[in-house]
Length: 530
Image (tube, rainbow, N blue to C red; front, side, top):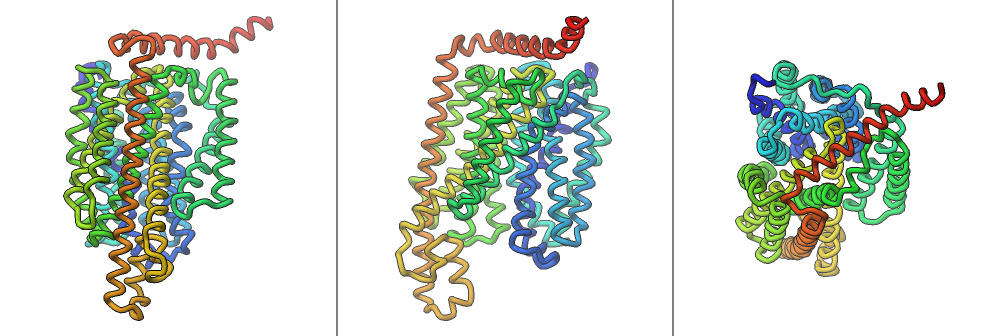
């Protein structure tokens, strides 16, 4: 790598993330086609969607730690091969069960790609400023993939069968297998590291039921089953933390969380994903159910805020080099909160431009913040733990996104049911905007006069916009509170931003000393026995 520019490796590290993030949303338009072909039950249809996110979130910590042990490039290539094979299996699925299994394997492979690519950026880019720009580009691609997924899906489905949305993954993964050995370093493994299998099981047992419970709360509100799942996730999470504290070579180095700025950075990343995905679910419903846009047209409009993302990510890296990371984090959070404020204050039932501007502001602020957060987190991580630390960061992203959808979606639902006039239209209309649109558009509309149907839709849209306003103010408050937390954590911590480099170096040295001591413990014990 010394004779070759590290920037040649960046596209190799970004392209897999584009595909992985696209697979989160690529099925949005394909559902009717899959339902007609495979005839899944309602439960199976939900699992076709949800299994990918569940497994991905549950395995990121383990795969990051495994990458540190066997080498980040090696695991990246294993993941690419698995992702390509699973994509082919998904495209050729002949039953709902086969497609669910394929999506689960896709998630396992995706969990190997995410921490490996971010860790390799740390190893490839030695210069701090260059690494910050590379992380910004990686982060922008990751955010943009979710927006591109529905568009690519819609375009393919106009000309091909539903399996084509999976086949587009294969050429990218084949190209990665060819160029990765040429452009990426292969000497990043630490064979002395061990991956604690019980910790891996506990991580999965903590994350999966927690994400499941959050999604259930968002979809159906409180229930005993979802509450039991959340409690189980919390209990297993406590056991996981207890075990990490007792292990000489833990899956997650909890010592890093003892640094206030590191732990606040991880929390900030969670809140950013809370805000970004929470807004995404609000805007998607607004474009389709309030404005009445077709799904593909709505997806095309939703790409416009991504332009702000493309500009904000590299600008954040440049500004952070001059004014410091905390200033960019706080400013990005405040700018994102301002986007939510615009959404809350100016949105009506015919406000396409307002919604797009507000979403662009929010996306720009959030991506600027997450770019410098990711750079900081992998920058302070010990080189032999950068994969596991990347997995921790990305797990916080998955949890934050699920929380955003659940919390902001619940705010919308509560306000909707309060505002919608009692006794107007079918029962379904009083529960949600989707219920109102579905009931008026179904056979029940035949017994409903046109004027009454119009009244139901108008009341439903008004109730949703009112709920959307409340959710936007909630998101703005959460982002502003986090900005205050960032300022407190960074500017009141021992040592200011101008001493960050020295403290980070010391943190790395201390962590590496702990790791070296842990690896030498068996040798020390054997000498003592002799």
